[in-house]
Image (tube, rainbow, N blue to C red; front, side, top):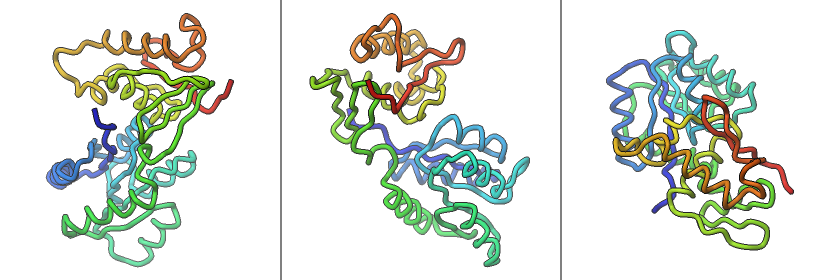
Length: 234
């Protein structure tokens, strides 16, 4: 099974434009989530930890500038492409000063936007898939080769187990719900139950934790889901 595709969050209140962007980005091979106002977009950005955000400036509830400022103030360095009808140089400068990575002015050509997205993804390293290794405890995850080691020995994970582990890694310690894991790893197939997530988490703990009954890294958040404690070495 191939590594999970890069995920893009589109925060855009124009429904037709948002769906058009999603269709074109999905054709290019990205996984796409939509949010229709600034407040919802900020929440989804925190939950999803996307690889890139396409952000409109003129949004209900919170404008794009405030969304971008909140993300950067929280230390979130996700690449952001601003999408807006504003053409004044001062607006562009303000966006870049707040931490935007690129700026596309409406109306725009789809090919232009796709090229901008690809360029920003390249500059940022293409998201998690470009990372060489992720560590927790004595576990090392090599993302490009989809291999895992515990101590000096390799760990055999099934494709689903690896994808589940990667989904937890991408959240950078944030809690992810069982339903979000189902959508990301299993495509939310109707034949798959939330209990499947629990079973696979139990297998990851068995293979990666020193004491699966007292996990230190693959943690349960009661009534919310799971999270992975990263960056701690045994």
